[in-house]
Image (cartoon, rainbow, N blue to C red; front, side, top):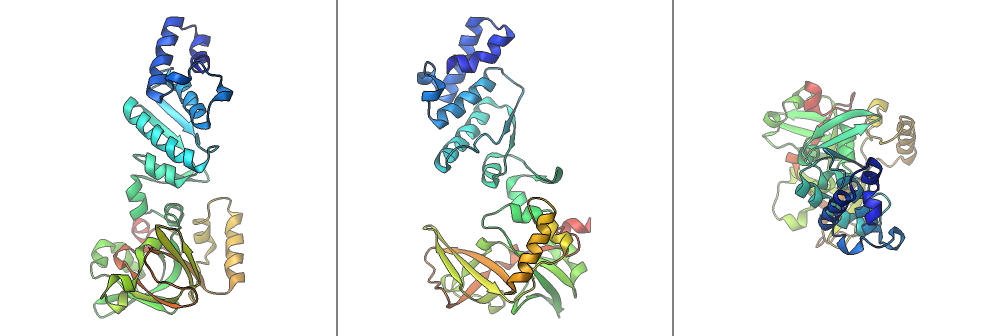
Length: 315
């Protein structure tokens, strides 16, 4: 392992004493001191990954570029190495560009995250900003697991209240919404794409007293017990997002995937599938009615023509 870590320095003609010093320092940082004399094939997956990182560290770069370094590791080891890399970057204070398709890695390790689609930058922000204020539907659906629920909706003003109607459901928006989301006013009396994150719904029975105009009445289709939480899948007789331009902003791969997604939505013919992420103490049962409390302050809205957030499309 020590020869592996120092190989690039040897090819550069760096003196042996200097190579040994750098390798020892890197091994200490990476917790590899006891493994330096072992053959790479005898090392564990995590140790091999650290040796690979050591090869970069000994070169003392101004920046690290890591291209999906954890993709070949099992789930448990990925979690461990994620923390190792984050600690290493903090200790070395070296700018690190980390490329990954795993949103969990991006969100947990990055100070700033750049979301790309088809080679084009969609949004670059702090992880929490990406989650709370996605610039478009692609970012909204990419960040968060399970993905954001989206549906076509009507935005209706009644006196001083603004309501959002979708399928057989309707919710009254929080009075602070017009001030917080000024771009939404352009869609009053028209159609808008509404997004609800699964974690922004809760079993109303666990919440206590709450206004009925912030609740959804649904029938639980599938219940998935995850241990620490429960996923409830259900359908509403609403209109799926059907604009090709908008669907293209949501799919993660090639544009032709938009056509496949549209065809699948039409073929299903059962409205729109939703998933709610509920507390593990919920009494939700399959094929039984359930009242869900919706955090209306955290609803998301997108332009039905472009897929942009109503606030970003305003600018």
